Amino acid sequence: MTEYEKMMAGLAHLPAEKELKNMRKRAREIVFEFNRTSPNDDETQNKLIRKLFGQADETTSINAPFHCDYGINIKVGKNFFTNYHCVMLDNGGITIGDDVMFAPNVSLYTVGHPLDVELRNEGWEQAKPITIGNNVWIGGSVVILPGVTIGDNVVVGAGSVVNKDLPSNVLAFGNPCRVVREITEQDRENYLRTYQPDR
Image (cartoon, rainbow, N blue to C red):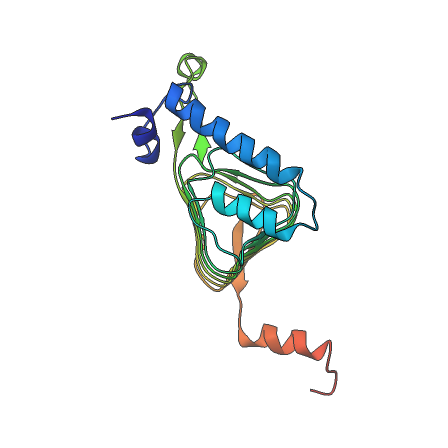
């Protein structure tokens, strides 16, 4: 297996290998161009993201600056939006559903390093995928760790560190992140009342 194949299979691999280094160089060039593109040039920004990501379309919207390792391992659905300073270390693959939005400073880390110092100093690492469902809102400065799956219709509160899977239809927050409660129809009613007090 190549080091890239090992990486994508979740096996220990050496990121300093030539193929992986070249892939990261390609991503950095595109990211550099994206981050210095005028914020009013939506067409060029979107074109660069579609070139960078493994899956994106004309509805993808990203506020610069943005950073990632490979880009090609990121797949986003319809109407994906992320605010400023998003970081996606996509070594293990990141899959995001439709109608997902990130607040500023959201970080997705699919990769980690050995606890053993000798192995860590030899340059080994291992990656696990992150999967996010449809209709998810991730609050500001949230960190999502390797191997996490987040279900549909989830809201993750600001400042959370998500180290375990979250089921669908829940509000979750904290460090470590935990499910606080289900999101229900009552949340819709409560929100609408703030704009229509006579409801």
